[in-house]
Length: 261
Ligand SMILES: [Zn+2]
Image 1 (tube, rainbow, N blue to C red):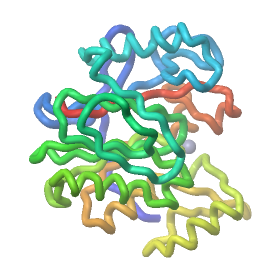
Image 2: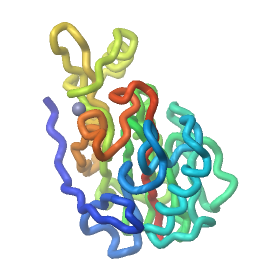
Image 3: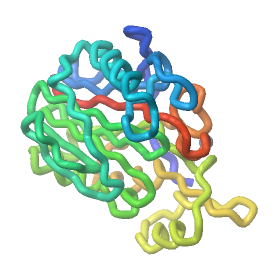
């Protein structure tokens, strides 16, 4: 099994909203906030801090949740751009707040712009080069992972001046090999990627399991990047995060905010 370097998260609560940060990030210049499902006003099955309008939750509750999260990080609503996901491998560079095109990875070097992306099992990938400074945030489900959305995000960072020596990459809470059974179609697509190490695909009792963190970590390490893993499985930790699979498809989405302040 390929072993990724681990990062311990720091947890905090503001406005009743629980969130996690990575330590030693940007001396207050870089925002990378991983919200949880804790805090917020949504009712089951979207309890509590559901940040998505597209899962069937009461829109009034979602608006209230977004307001709580935005004020919990001290941001203004006009700074925060919610990214419409494509579930593919589209990366885009953003220099102004709106309109933001649909994308699976966004990168910016513009201060004051905060990306918001929602998740429930797909792997969040955050890039930061504090020297530029520039950040990127990507969303990698199995399709995006196979389509190398992580590398597309890295190319966008490079075009903003980021280098592998000065960039750190963090893998956020997503579904892991412990909890993600996949069918033959997905397993074959992963095999066809021709990775140098096949340990993102596991087999237990004849069933294939995919580890999105190991897959994306390998892709990024092949680019010479320093990858740090939060090692949180959303399906194992649905007490804290939402898990689309472990909750039968009826659940909310937690959010990640990323930007340069
Ligand atoms: Zn798990």
